[in-house]
Amino acid sequence: MQASQRYTLNIRDLFTYSNEGLCGAEAVVAILDGNTEVDRLSFKGKVGPGGDGYYRSYTAKPGLKAKKVSGPGAVTMTSLLG
Image (cartoon, rainbow, N blue to C red; front, side, top):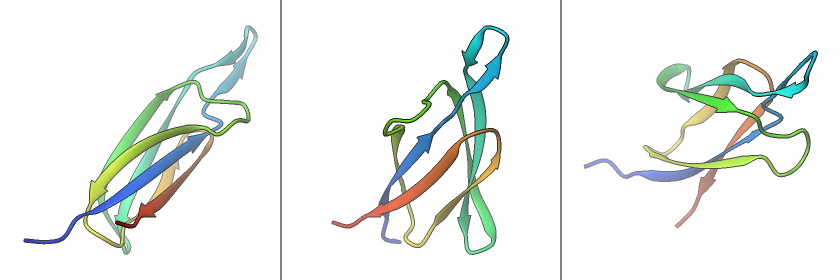
């Protein structure tokens, strides 16, 4: 059985501007094992501008990274030890 790792994904500044002001948006994030995509996540809504962002837990094998594929904002993936 392979060990699993807990991660935290942080999504910031997920929004667009329209004539009516700030609107929600969608961002797509690829989870990578090296250069191989092993999962894809979609985040829809409005986060920001500014602030701490939105946090989401993710559990998978150790050593993964996240890369935003499309959409506004920024994403970081942090490994939680323990």
